[in-house]
Every structure is written in C-alpha cells, then in structure tokens.
Length: 186
Image (cartoon, rainbow, N blue to C red; front, side, top):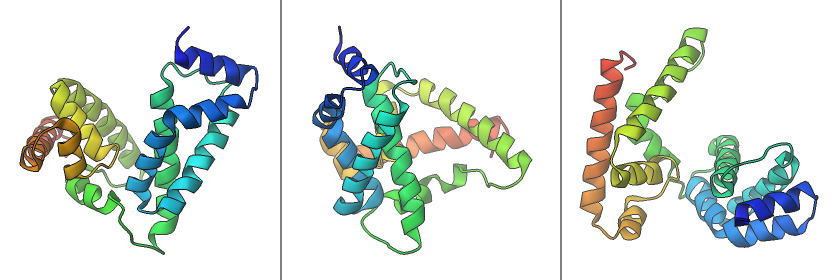
C-alpha cells in the first residue's frame, strides 16, 4: 500500500491523524508555495491551516490519485483567493505581480460568455503546449507560473544559472504566443 493510499484510508476512517501526516509530509511544500504567492509567513500559515480543513472536508467523497498534486492545488487556490482579497490592502513580497506581468499577453479578458469560451480554449491550448515542452522546460515553466517560484529559486533547484532559466522561460513564452496565435486565441 502506497503512502497516498494509507493517507486516504485514514481520511475515510475520519482519523484525525491523517491531518498530522499531511502536515508532516506536505507542510513545507504548502508553506513555501503559500509564502511565494502571499508574500507573508502569517498569511501563508493561515492558508496552510485552511488547506487542512478543506482537505478534511473534501476526502471523502474525493479520492485523489496523487496527494501531493491534490494538496498543492487546494493550497494554491486558497492562496490565490486570499491574495485577491488582500491585494487591494497590501503589497508585499508576493511573486504574483511579476508572474502576471510576464504572462499578461496570454491571459484572456473576463466578463462575457464569449470570454469564458475563449478562456476554456486557452486552457486547453495551454495543456497541449505544456505537453509539447521538454521535461526540463515544462518543470521550469510550471515552477514559475504555477508555483510562483523566483528565477533564482528555480535556478538553484535545477542546478543551473538564472540566465538559462530566463532564456528557457522566454523561449517557452514565445512558443506559447506562437501557438495561441496559430490557434487564433491571441
């Protein structure tokens, strides 16, 4: 039985030790992601606690295949919601403004039903785009634009230079722009 299966079993039995095990196994991942998004340890800690509550409420009925992905998605979504609420009030060390500035040419406008359909098409195009990247380029792209890591953090994690990371990100954005233009989504 895998670690994920053992955790799911604890959640199904409504055993509160499941939350402790999630904290031990994924706490650092969630805390780091939350700090990157929110730019504040206090807000990150609160979001991590909210993630545990949401996890407790969602399993069961949900049965995630990959706990790391499930936990990080919940954390990320909670942090982005919190960021939106705090954004008007605070500006801190968050990576969101930099990431949005880099990707803004590729983000659809919101509002009309046509915009919603366009955003769905962009999401599907982005999935195809990510699958077309090499493993290294995909990891770097996701580290920057999904996990909100700084270029320096990505370089250190991948054992490379910041210049190489910047070049991979630029080339990836250029490829994304070309693909979206070819699919008439840009």
